[in-house]
Image 1: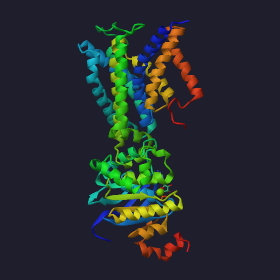
Image 2 (image 1 turned 135 degrees about the horizontal axis):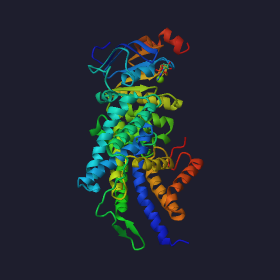
Image 3 (image 1 turned 120 degrees about the vertical axis):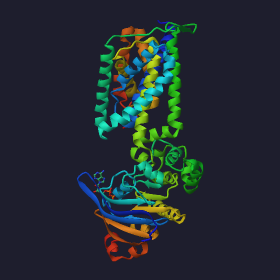
Image 4 (image 1 turned 135 degrees about the vertical axis):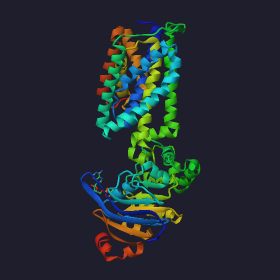
Length: 289
Length: 238
Ligand SMILES: Nc1ncnc2c1ncn2[C@@H]1O[C@H](COP(=O)(O)OP(=O)(O)O)[C@@H](O)[C@H]1O
Ligand SMILES: [Mg+2]
């Protein structure tokens, strides 16, 4: 039998990882919920954001500081990408949007590959191996910070979506595009804001991951695969689903790793994913069809 | 026609893809007037409303609202000018609360008067006040129609389009709905009432136009049309 404090430590570690999964997933689910498309460029944008954070760090800016600049920068880039590239190139057809984001991901990834090759890089920060002593377990400091920031960002996002006009407009467009147009909501603007929020969440996730993770042009893809299972698990388009789903997936990965060995951690995610698809295909918070 | 028309539509044509729907529509609405557009299913009533609110671009003709042309205006700009369209089928935001729906009614216009206008809407529709925190999708059909109109009123419209507001309501509620429209008209609101409910619409409209196959086939004062033999024959079954 395992000692309860080992189990508890594994759960806490899972929650820490899960908070970043949630942050990556929330942008994906928001874009799905509002634009009704899967943003295939999500992984490539995460890779790009990690490179941005990496070079900021080489230039002497700590990732946690870089976050303050990169989040608005990626918001603006996401907004512009939707308004200037994705929307004009797709001529109002949802299926084209999907293909354009796929194209965008190929371009971003290849630019990163050409510029930085497929080498894996990482940074050294003084707190890289620092940890927080809970008495019964040590939690790595970068992951504690990631958890805290991801929680704050999620809360801010939730408040923004429910208590600001722009947030309400985003939710309105998600469920009733025609009605939203008739109250005077500029749907193209809302789409772009939603894309921008997704990209900003990725920039934040990148800055939180960098101190304890590595960077290469494909790093985002691996993360987004997990984020995608989180999105389906939580219910496509559901923001609370992505947040709670992210935490749950993190814990499941951690516990699978504890019981069956580190390398099988992600296997638990996919087993659970398949069970979920069989039992409740709409996900935790998904609308019944 | 009164010459100080708030809305002037001339020679309007519109359609979808290969199908031409509206042709040669002339429609003038003076400020403060209630004008009815009548016609059975599929004649192009909703298409006309979509063109007026900027959802669908006209293929020919002109639309002037308050002296400004609307043919190329974005829907959000049209709302900003005060032309508000309460659509057929309500199109409320189903998973948002009644209050949030009302807030969004003032997303583009009259934001500063939001609280006062909410009070006003709640006074007109006490049933919405009782359900202000409830998700709009859980309201009954009649309540949803009230919410759709209330949401429209939140923008302090200068011109309100009502697309089949009595559709799907019980006879009692239909009665109530027409009383409400009469009341809004009496308060000075300019209304374009699009309906299949011919008798009740004619009873409260200053002018009315009958649409058939995308053309206006009959126009006149409300009471005059009521006794027009052509209308009696095709719509009143007399
Ligand atoms: N989005 C659309 N695409 C193609 N045809 C349409 C569309 N909407 C309506 N129509 C057609 O246009 C005609 C008029 O429709 P509509 O304006 O909705 O009529 P009404 O509101 O008077 O019932 C109908 O024949 C309908 O089938
Ligand atoms: Mg119609």
